[in-house]
Length: 120
Image (cartoon, rainbow, N blue to C red):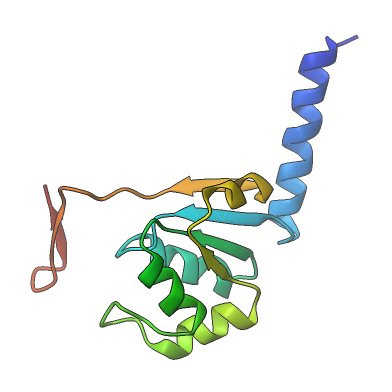
């Protein structure tokens, strides 16, 4: 018979996989910048409810109004995510309610749009 802790971990893993497969998993993405925002949109497009977390209150307010602060992301995409359950917040404790948490940190990285490449 498996150890209780091992059994519990296997149960949690199985539950998470099931939530991912049936799209009931809630995804928290910390960092709503050039990487986090498109990532949020993709998760939302394929059917997941997403919590977007950022320290910048103005970004959070813009997202919750359906506005985009990234030139190549149209407001319609933000509106669609909001209609699918997306919400942005500065409250990092909201990540606790998510089934999966992604932290996106691209500080010190230069994005060269002309070359369509990331340079360190």
